[in-house]
Image 1 (cartoon, rainbow, N blue to C red):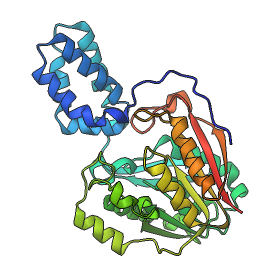
Image 2: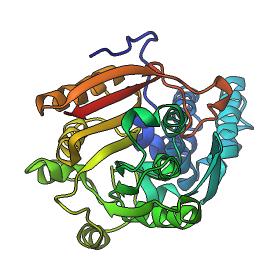
Image 3: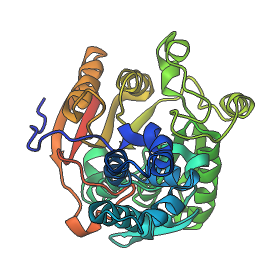
Image 4: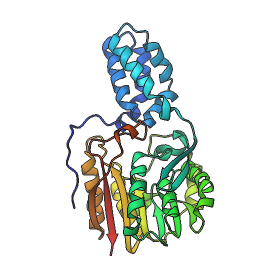
Length: 349
């Protein structure tokens, strides 16, 4: 197994700052007379807003208004940073829920994007999904996609699964765990049903933590998802898990996933989920950004996923994936990571 080496120094991770956004916005008011403190807060916000989740959080806590007031401060550096942060909150990152259409070869795929409160980290299409779709066009024959029963894990908006349907899959099952995400996927299924004739499209609930006995209790997700979103409640989560669950005995010849490897305990949970859901023979193909997490490099996180998978009896290969063009990184969910992207291939023979 190979993995890309680090070529850039580690910097503070955008997602690491998500929990600080509210206090940073507050600091722009309460510490506005303290040049050092307000400048430190602005610098952190400048890093944070390259992640759309942080932009949404900033807006939710009145940060845009406080940044506008910062434009009249008598500190040139602070004014420049405040203007930069405000600029990052415009364009793609300012869009609300709606339909996003992307073209891959001859296929135009429309998906419905929701808001961060409802959809958590799956509320928008991510850069790795676009990379995977482009690769899928050229490599779908390698995985025997035509006529296959396909599972998309951590589907989010489902762009990869909808392209798989166009490329000849017999059935595509989109899975995620937030109630709002599943409802959003239902809308995307409606958008793609006519163009996916001959392929059954299904949306199901799948919680990776449940694949390891005791892990759901040990590492229970806060209501609303991964702790960075607030949509849903305990009753709606329970109802979704009960009414929309993927059948326990279902396995799939092809499993696809993009940007699905996060910090603990999810590498372990994902590996166990893939092991249980992958048919024999079968192939799981993941396209992952090499994203640093607090206290751990992106390479180390992916290596742990691979180690868990091989310990469960799957053959694993990691290869460098293409990246987007520089101009395609528009901020939000389209952010370049220092290690680029990789493909992870896991197989049951």
